[in-house]
Structure formats: C-alpha cells, structure tokens
Length: 355
Image (cartoon, rainbow, N blue to C red; front, side):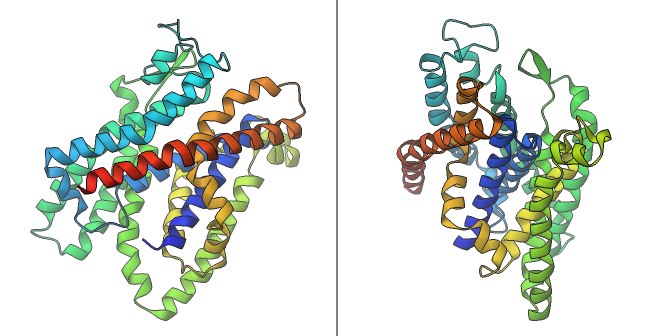
C-alpha cells in the first residue's frame, strides 16, 4: 500500500477520534458519527484491501485463525488493560473489588460489561471474534464461484453479496437475542456497520484497476473524488446537533451519527475507498496524511480509551476549556502509550509472525 494513502486514512482516523473527544467534552455532538467511521474502518481493514487478491484462502488453515486472534489480542488487550488499570487505581473510575456491575474492572477487561465509552470495545471485540469466520466463508464462496465467474468479476460479486448481508444483519441480528451489556442496559451488536466496511474493501479491489487504466478517468476521479472527500469532512461539522438546531429548532436533539448510522457508515467507507484511489499528490491526501494527523491517527486507540476517563475531573470548566485541557492531556498520554506500548508490541508481533 502506498505510504501516503495509508497516512491519509490514518488522518481520517484522527478526524473520527477528534469528533468523539469533542462530543464527549460537550462541543459538536458528533460522537456517534465518529463511531460509525471507526466501525466501517475496522471492517474495511479486516478484509485486507491492499493485500493479494486471494488472501481469504489463508483462512482455510486453522493456524491462520490462531494467528489472527493472537494478533488481535496483542493489538487490543495490553494497552486497553493498562488504561483500565489506571482508570481503576489512579482515577477511581472502575472498581477492582466489583465483580457484577458495569463498574467492575474485571468485567470491563473481559469485555463482558462496559461503562461509559467502553461499549465501543465490546462492539469491536464481537466483530473481531466473528471476522475470521466471515472471511473463511467469503473464501469458500470465491472458490465455488471461480468455476463459473472470471476472477476479475469475483470481487464485484463479493461486494454485492456483502451489501445484501448488511441489510440482512440489520434486520435479523436483533432477532437473535444476542446482547452486549453496558451502561446499565443491553445493546445489539452492530454487525452491519462493520459489514459495510468489509463490502467496500472489495469495491476498492474492483475499482483500483479500472480507475488507473485511463489517464482521463484518473484525472476526472481525482477532481470528483477530492470534492467528495472535502464535502464529507465539512458535513461532519455542519450536521452537528448544535449547528442544525441553530438553523431550525426542529433538529434539537437530532444526532445524525445515531439517527442514520448506516448512511454515515456508507459515506465513511466511500471516503476511505476514495482516499485509497486518489493520487498521493492530491491535496486531500496531503492534508489528511500530514505528519501531525498521521501521528494522532496512529495513537487514536489510546486516545479513545484515555480521554473519557479524564473528563469528569474537569467538569467545572467551560466547554472550550474542557476540550482544550482534556484534549492536550489525552493526546500527550496517548502518544506516550502508542510509542512505548502499542508500537513496540506491534513491531514484536510482526517480527514474531515472520519467523
């Protein structure tokens, strides 16, 4: 994958965490929209859009299932557990003596119950548990269809099938009775949002060769795609409840990221595909892929975990002061965690799995 394109998608990751932090601090209530971006992004990268065409066949081996789960565990649990421990012993946010309620450190660490923003981790972990099985099924479908469908068209068929699965999961997953406990309630696994990202990983595979095949098409796409990304970024701001309700009182209490999750996830996935297809020299890729955005996008997981724990300690501040203080402290702590915990673990993991 081209490094600048990778950076621009990391920049989009920073944009999403920025929306969430601002929302939790009481400024621009677009946290739900930020979550939609993250869920779609998780599905998108689970399908390895920049890997070899037949990466799915690797999941025919049980060893790759084990490898996948070990990598996910190493990616999530060390930093999550470290931050949760800090929240329990340093900030008194979680209780290590509680083993039954949402305040329980143990239940939050095992993703069996969640408090506050940690519901997000439950959704991610639920998807990661299922993801290898879904990829295995995709591989089996590709094997069967390859008998009658040319290889170039297989990705388009998978995109269509996954799109159908988006709406089937939206309709039928709630009927399964599977619920995730958190914040004194139970929520349905939002599998459809991850499936949107998965489907667009295959759409990217379809489009990448077609768009680059012709200079005129590539030039037109560069203009139209850049305008699309910029428009979507602007919409993440102007569709906030604060701005919409100021224009028309009927939008008071309207949060687009919660009211229209599927639309938001589709737009987020489309933005990711567009960034991946735009030339590295485009202004949009250069803007989102700048070094500051990339660094903060890399640290977004730690930033997400930390910021909410700090907000309660600055509740007396004004919205802008709280956003500034919580933002600066969270960024500083997140960058330290990324550079001294996340990054070394990921490097060791890659080195280990190369052997």
